[in-house]
Image 1 (cartoon, rainbow, N blue to C red):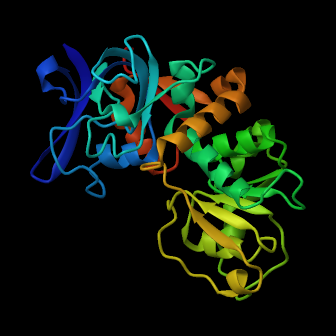
Image 2: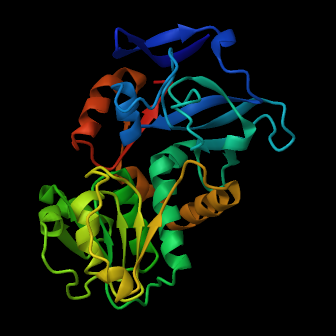
Length: 329
């Protein structure tokens, strides 16, 4: 039997509960994984609450990522006992996800973990950590380096992607400006390596000036909306912003001046269908950059029974750092 957090829909309302499932209820895929951990991301909160119609088929097991040990494999790339991480490819939306003690997944969705990463560390990083590193790699592909004149800005810095981005950038030698709507988290962000903490309001208020004094040599934006438009006018010439999330809305209002006069770029980061070679490079770099003890300090661990409450809290911005779900607790 498999223990899982299962959501179902009736009369347009989505509800979730922990259930015992027979093995025959699992997907028929080529890789059977004994799941150790999953995580809670913003998208999980949406799925559990039935927001955005991310899930079209019920009953459904959410959880956009998972880490565990291979129990059965029909794919020569994986052997019984391999430790793997599964992220993206609409796992937890179209495909059943990580909130189960056992899950069967498409082998193409799985990556073998670097030797230095445990399954716990993989999910303490999770989709958020992968996304943060993909954003950093994209900025570096566009010539960002620690020798840059100004700091790198991270918006939504107290959240999952933001926290890992601040930590990873500081470990790589960058100066980091962290923007947050919760200035009470300033001490937390400085503990991750931020050299400056900026109130979100400062970056989100509309401005009539198409360009402002250059203040940032690059940015990782988790907010979107007016924040994205405003920060573009404060980038160095030739600088880029890696756009990761749209918690502040998808409406984009910006002048063309940052693009035409300063040659700035917006880089869209998609961790869902990212090629596996790029994923492997990102996981390896995360394993080399993020200290285990620091990662543990920004991670909270919960069980499946906490998911309903946590899903509500993450949607209103009350979750800090990383949330790991121990599916066997």
